[in-house]
Amino acid sequence: MKDTIILAIETSCDETAAALIRNGSEIVSNVVASQIESQKRFGGVVPEIASRHHVEQITIVIEEALEKANMQPSDISAVAVTEGPGLVGALLIGINAAKAFAFVHNLPIIGVHHIAGHIYANALVQPMEFPLLALVVSGGHTELVLMREHGSFEVVGETRDDAAGEAYDKVARVLNMPYPGGPHIDRLAHEAEESVDFPRAWLDESYDFSFSGLKSAVINYKHNMDQRGEEIVPAHVAKGFQDSVVEVLTTKTLKAAREFNVKQVIAAGGVSANKGLRTSLEQVFLEEGIPFTVPPLKLCTDNAAMIGAAAAYMYEAGVRGDLSMNGVPGKEL
Ligand code: KG4
Ligand code: ZN
Image (cartoon, rainbow, N blue to C red):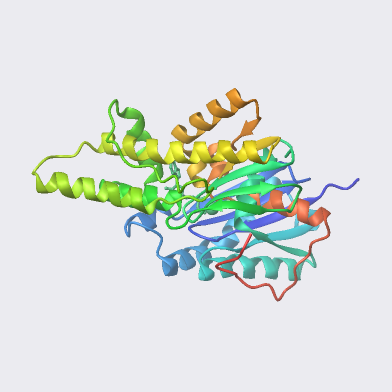
């Protein structure tokens, strides 16, 4: 049987990415051009700058993905692209590049949800077993998603305010660390032997999350210390913050995994690159006897390989978009 080759494109935030995926599970090439260096100066992602970078990079990145794979457009079965959620101007660059490629080479086009992409990053590592519970933690999302089969997503819990990654980035700013702050806080937290005690937002029995109170607690702590003329120890703050985030994420994920009797638990999104979170989830699910996987670091943060993996299942299921596709900044899962 002929291989299914998906050309996938992702431009929802600050990475311009293209990848070629064979049969939904094999990465043939995976190119990511990051804008982190230029966005750092602004302490976050400036939408207009993100769009400009995407315009400059998108053709180069697609060509590089084809070259690295040693493939021609005629080898490709379909073009996949992130439809949303994300920054509308950024999404549109990828979508228009995908449409142009699909039109010129007479290929079907498939629109993929960014979070579905993060979840399917795991399909590049091992087959997905259902029912499956995914903890999706990124700069824009914190969700517990139950999947009973391919393409079915039930959000059982979500953040009521900040996303976990957003809280990491804001706390990093308070500690004078560069954007994106997650990896810096993670590293600092591991250097600390003591920690500041910060609250945990349990929200009763709910699977929902809240991180804005924790973020405010960190800000207030620094403010109070400043007023008293005392120096904070950034590593102790980082550890206190990370312990709170990791404990809440782990506890709620375990509770949901038990309630829904899942066969597999996965973590996805940029924050799943966090060492503290990975270790904690690995440990509790090892004890619980439920297989837990998290993709390798470079598949946790934004990339196009994950979009291609999600699209491969949609392609098999007959899902097709058309050239009227538009960016959907607040797209529902
Ligand atoms: O998935 P992603 O690349 O982009 C979005 O879709 O949002 O996630 C980016 C987020 C940023 O907030 C970044 O600080 C966070 O992931 N992040 C981390 C780590 N690496 C990246 N957060 C905590 N620990 C890390 N090691
Ligand atoms: Zn993402």
